[in-house]
Amino acid sequence: MNFKFNKILNKKNKSKIICLTAYSKNIAEAIDLYTDIILVGDSLGSVLYNYSTTRKVTLDQMIEHSKSARLGIKNSLMVVDMPYRTYTNKKRALKNAKKIIKETKCDAVKLEGGSSIIKIVEHLIINKIPVMGHLGILPQSVKGKFKIKGKKNNERNKILNDAKLLQKKGVFSIVLECVETSLAKKITKSLKIPTIGIGSSQNCDGQVLVIDDLIGLNESKIKFVKKFGKIKNNISQAVKIFKKEVLSKKYPTRKYSYN
Image (cartoon, rainbow, N blue to C red; front, side, top):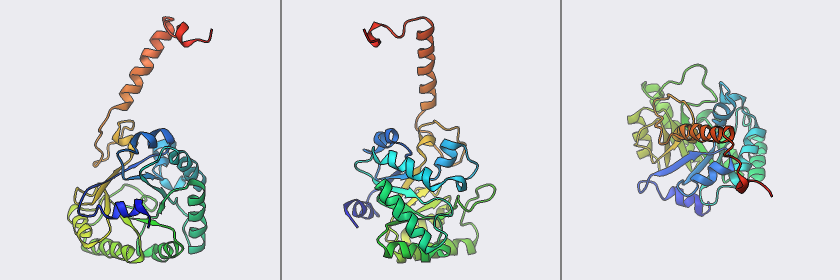
């Protein structure tokens, strides 16, 4: 593990970890000074392409957006989601993970699941591919509405055991998505590696949000989303002024023309 990984691991029980998504150079560059981890998530399927599920996101799409984001990342650890059906077996997973890392120069990949994919996770790590885990709601597996995870005892036990298993096999952190508050706390306290929460309370070691939700570019009404900005309003206002100046012939003036 290099300096960036050690920096993340050392924040456990000391300082909250800041993680955000980015799908392009400009956004990555804007957030890089303030984040510990930048995730090129397959959430780009719904955010950028209006897909109804992340299952439609392709490996090529992930790679192209990751190559763009990489250009804007200087400080943060860069993690890329492995899309649906790119890690159905050990051989395929290793081939695709190597392709992602080679072409995007990212630091790690993220896979969804616990015991069901543990041999694949182990195979990647043995082959020196750093892996971030993902438990709770697994968007690549969900059919229908997302529901909170960890209310029933059998579900709680499975998620906790999966978290311990992932840690044992060598993942450097685990995203907990929409995991019930007390369970998120129990998992976080049980692990030596950091947990990154999304809809899983402040009990996690860090938090992640989709950048478009955070800045108010999306009309997301998901419970855990807080809008920290109103960028959509800013865009509309800028375009409104642009239109007004073009129609009134105030733009472009001589200053903005080649003479």
